[in-house]
Image (tube, rainbow, N blue to C red; front, side, top):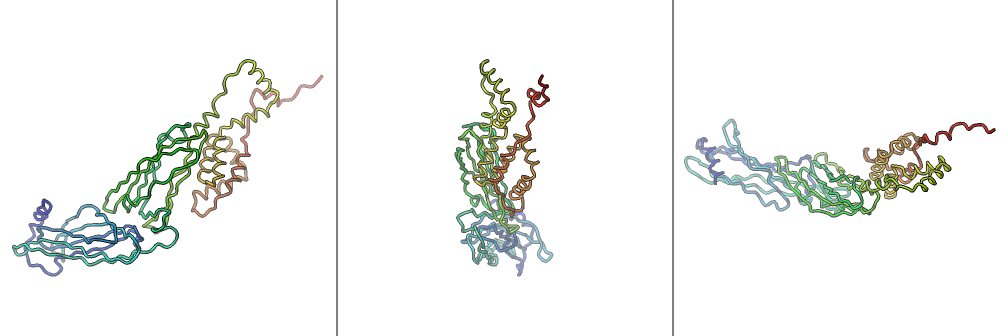
Length: 410
């Protein structure tokens, strides 16, 4: 009631007069953000505009039932001053986002604006109708689409993904928990249109799914939807495991093309294996230490090289590399490759120096981060060749005399 009183007060300055044709008009237009025929569940904006050269005391806009559409109103109605043929008038605007539920040709029935106007000192009720609005909804052509059970149909103007771990997964020891929180935010749809929680499951990792939170924020340009997924993750084996990436395809309603986003792959539990491999051996008794020293002296450089290979810093990452190759997991392979390079810079330098590896590593980068048409190289063969290359080893100072000239026998 307060709203109607405010409208009456604002318009009280308009003088009473006899209504003529064109003094009261109501129009509805349909807008698709991409400018093309929409697909099912894609947002269409209905712009309802009224122009009235009259003194309005009360008003009530009645919306048709919209049986073939889901819908949400974008904000409050707006009243403003305007003109009709140079004469002062009142303008009205409302925006409604509708989402067609299937393909076909549909008609949005007229909106009805019931106005109580003051004309010639008397009040009278006038109904102003809009014209019906036809909307043609196109059927999807090609794989996937609105009717396919997989993948989830996701038409949006924009899509962003954030992935947060507390703590970071590479720092976890065996059995330690971490909370993973993934948030999807999309423009041009409501939260119920976002996909269900994806399956996060990899052998060797324990996952416990948390509740899913959905939220829709209304803006003048359309709704903005957000969904948050949570998992508690624990490494179940004492070696690093690659948690595979999860692909999320979506349809860009502005560019009218399919695009791909993903929840990224991560390595879980690298700290457990690293701690086990880097832990110093238990102290030995004097006799055992003496025997070990004699044995090391007798074996020389060969025994020292075997020991270095056994304690290579990049060994856990190389095992993860081999596992990713067996699974044909290109992103997990790349993540393990980066981890190995960080753990052993000398090994990374040896890889770069090998002329046969450079083109194959470049091909892997092109397949993952290029235009999407480059083939993935043979991961099994690449992993095998990477493991055969060793970094150049420096000779310990204590063994340096073995490389010098021997004294002459007398």
